[in-house]
Length: 227
Image 1 (cartoon, rainbow, N blue to C red):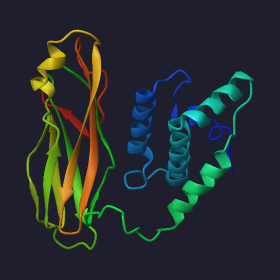
Image 2 (cartoon, rainbow, N blue to C red):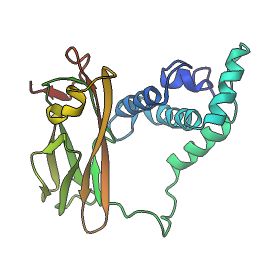
Image 3 (tube, rainbow, N blue to C red):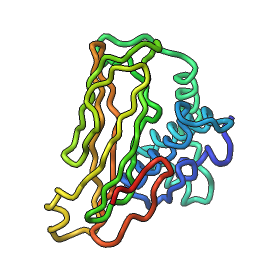
């Protein structure tokens, strides 16, 4: 069923129609951290996540987003292609399609979160976040961990137990091009934590927003600021 909230993709993601693609993407990631079924125990989290995915798909498509904006300017909430997207994401959540031959092999490892967002980092600030990995079958993991990004560091590079914790450290102090440069006061940086085993790989996107002046504006409860 399409509710008043889910009928408007901007309201679903909690952004304004004037938001740029970066803002929309950050809002999507924050909602994933809250409602993704792997990390959320809230009632209705699965249905809410399907609404979030559908809204993000619409706003990523400039043509559909334009249709939504035109409809809003006429004083009504748009439902352009919304039922189609709702059905598509609902079907994906209920079924597990057969893997395609060209699909990238996935490591037999699960993580308790799908994205890591360190929020705002000021100059000289360092933050940490723990990621917990589990094997699919409950047996020991045989994999290695890689940090994709010069500003990221891991406290371990091998996973051997059934449940393994990796501490991810975000330390952008070496990005002198931004800290000593001129121009915008903030910039988004992206990286990833990649787990590789004999079956394939699993990539966890990691991001942060550098802010040249002032300390961080917010931190999630699962994150620690080192300095």
